[in-house]
Image 1 (tube, rainbow, N blue to C red):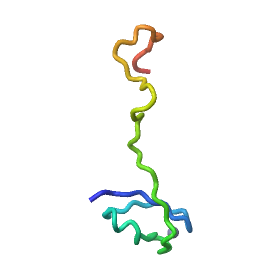
Image 2: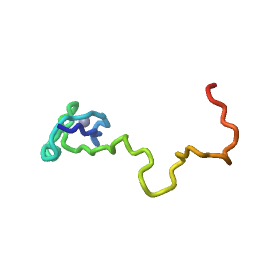
Image 3: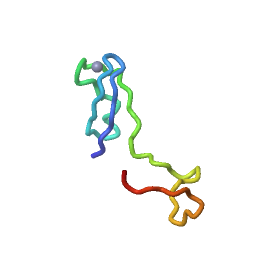
Image 4: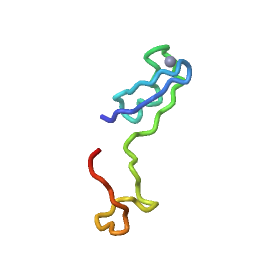
Length: 69
Ligand SMILES: [Zn+2]
């Protein structure tokens, strides 16, 4: 079952719920029991397709990158 991140619009509390997609409609804030909550965006969007990703193995024109530090 997926976990969704929510933020309460009433008290501003952030919380996550492990509920099904259908149950999101009846999810409520655990703090103030308000149903005025907003689903937060997921955190796993690390450069999706669209713009040029800075991931390149053969980077000859790159400046000297010091590893570590
Ligand atoms: Zn709340």
